[in-house]
Image (cartoon, rainbow, N blue to C red; front, side, top):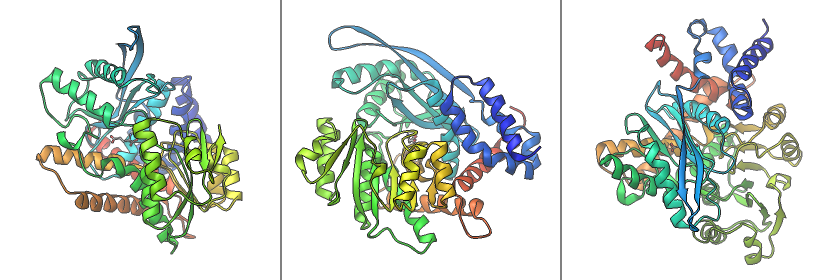
Length: 449
Ligand code: GLU
C-alpha cells in the first residue's frame, strides 16, 4: 500500500469512529501524515498499534455546570476534561471557556498537547478541558460563580499527580485563582493542582509571558538557522490576548516592527508600528477595561481598523497567528506568501488550516507548528510544577533562561527529525516525529494497557 493510501485508510477509520469532529480529524491528519511513514520504517511501533492507541483519549469526562447570573436566572453549561495520555507524566493542559467549545475542539487540543508536552522534554502527559461558557460581557461575580461551580465537579478528576489544568482562551489569572480557591476549599489541600496561579500563592514568574516569548524565540532560532535576524523585520500578529501581547513585547525588544493585532471583531493596522507605549494601551484595554481592539484607532488615528477582518492581507515579512484555531485559510496563506511573508510561527493552537499549511510548505517558507512554537507556555507551567514540588520559587532571570533553553532544544529536535538532504527543514514533520518518539517509547515499555 502506498503511504497516501495508508493515510487515507487510517483517516477513514478515524472519521468513522469519531463522527462530526472535524477539528479532531484535522489535528490527527496533521500528525498521521508523518507518523505513518515513520512507523513503517520502525515496525516496533506498528506491531504495538501505537498510533491507533494514541488517537483514542484515555478518557473524556463531561458534566453539567449550573450557575446563577446577576439577574438570578439559572444557567446551564457543559464542562469537559479530555485526559488524552499520561504515558510520560500527569495529564497537563489548559482549560478553555468559549461559546464555540465542543468535544471535537477539546479532543484536538488534548491530542496536540500530548505531542507538545513531550517536545518540552518535561514529564507531562496531555489533556485539555473547558466549557461552552462565554465569559464575554460577564461580571466578575458571574465569572466567580461559574468557575466555582465548574471546579466543584472537576476537582474529583484532577490532582497534582493526576491531572494539572491551566489557562487557555477565556481562562487567565482571574479564572485560575477562582478555580484554585475552590479546589483548595473542597479538598482541603494546598497543592500545585493548577498552573498559572498568582505569584502570592504558588505561581511562577514568566508564566504569563512564556507562550508569547517562546513563539518569538522559536522564530529567532528558525531565522538563525538561515543566518538571519529578527531585527528590522515587519511582523503581522493576530490576537490581543496574553499570547499576542507578549509576542509583541518580545518582538519589539528584539528590534522587529509590529504592524497589526486583532480580536474576534476585527484587526488594527498601524503602519507606524505598535510601540511599547501603544502595547501598554492594548494591555490595559484588554486586561482592565475588557474593551474591543477597534478603540485603538480612536487613540491612534494613523491606524486603520479592518472591521470583521484578520490581518493576513497586510504585507509583512513574518506572521504570528496568536488568536485561535483555523484563523489562516488557504486564501489567507496565498496572500501572505504573495505579499512576501517568509516565516510563520504559530502562537495559537492549530491556527493554520490544512490548505494554509500546504501553501506554506509548497512555497518552502519557514513554518513553525503550534505544538513546537507555542510550547513555551506549558513548559513554564511544567517549571511551576517543579517549583511547587520543591516549595521554592525561582527568579525571573532563571526562568527566562530555562524557557530560552527549552525553546532552543525544541528547535534542535525539529531540525534533527525534519531536515532533508537539501538543507530545508520541515518543522511540522520534525515536531510530529520528535514529539511522538518519547510518548511511543513509554507506551512500548508499558506493554498493552
Ligand atoms: N493552554 C496552553 C497550551 O495550549 C498552556 C497549557 C498549560 O500550561 O498547561 O499549551
